[in-house]
Image 1 (cartoon, rainbow, N blue to C red):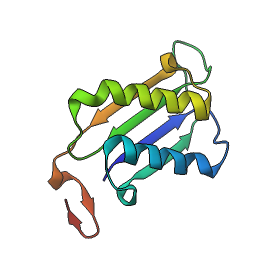
Image 2: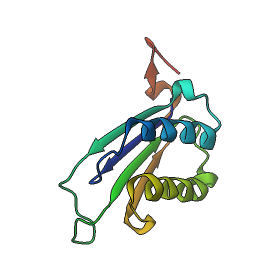
Image 3: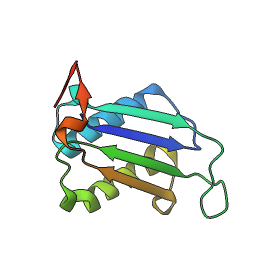
Length: 111
C-alpha cells in the first residue's frame, strides 16, 4: 500500500538501491515490505531553479500516512536522495498523500 515514486535526472546506479529504498520506506512507515512499491523514473529533461543540476521529485502515498511525521519523512527521504542519487536536499520536492482506503485497490479489492 505504500508507494514511493522517484523521478530524477540522475541515473540509477544499481538495482540494489531500489531494494534499499523499499526497506527504508517499510521501516519509516512501520509497514510490511511486502506491500511497498518503489517506482523509479529517469527523466533527463527536468529543471529546477532554471538549471539541470541533480534534482528529484518524489511522491509518497500511503494509507493512514501520519501528517505530523512528514517533516521527519522529508529529512529521511532527502537523506536517501543525497546518498543514493547525489541530489542535495534543496533540490528535492516531495508530495505526500494519504488516500481513503476505498481509493486504493489491490488483489481484486480495495483496502
